Amino acid sequence: MPQWNCSCPNCQAARRGVLPHLTQSSVAVSEEPDRWFLINASPDFPTQVTGFPELHPKTKPPRNSPIRGVLLTNSDLDHILGVFSLREGERITLYATSAVRDSTSQLGLEKTLNAFCGANWQEPPTKDFEPLDVNSTPETGLRYKAIELPGGPPRFHVPKPPAATRGHSVAYLFETPRTRHRLLVAPDVGTVNPALQAALESAEAVLFDGTFWSGDELRAVRPGAPEATEMGHVTIKDCSLKLLAGLRAKKKILIHINNTNPILMEGSPERLAVEAAGLTVGWDGLEFEL
Image (cartoon, rainbow, N blue to C red; front, top):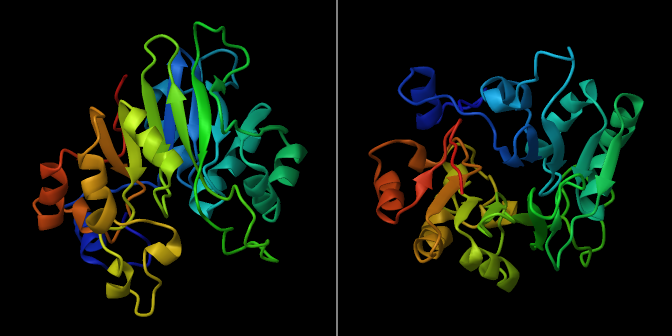
């Protein structure tokens, strides 16, 4: 925010300096020094790395990075375009379902990476936790698993796969071997299924889909725009406000917030409702430790 072609109230306020500029959704997690993993890599990836010193390269050797891999929740453009920037580094590990990997191939992602740094593709576990970093010991490093969510392929996927195809959207649940604390990262939630509900209830911290406040939010700026559910997102007003308020998690943070969402405006009724429910509106540079 602001979006380059949008003059909604939030974007206008951001251009005037009333609201901060925001980059597109991406999360970095780590259990060990100098070993970081991204959940999605947005088109703003280079700017985000610059703004977070822990992701900067060391002074020696001249080319290096603490980023060890990227976990893709789906193949939306705002989640995968930043991966193209990683071609400038060393061989990278990408964690993605076969459906997501197939979709990204239509954009030439795998072919591009193989022409530069190369990539190792890892199918995420969906039943039991497994080590995220094969170089970690059982006492160190994060453990993770994917939570399968309802969802279809991206708009650029041609031809459309069968309706029964699974794996186009996942959330990720992380666990630390040191504390057994859990973090759930779920930026794209179209439906709260039993597996996701269980993950929500087990987590000490939740980063959750805050894309839209209401279902018809986009239509205020773009007549005929699809509703939130058609775009694969539950809304804060009708779902996540009550859902997250009832969780035991100490940290409940809304991420992946669209520029049209009124919760971005401090003092708005929607922002006050979110804060009253014990939720945090995510911002660039937000950092915490479990």
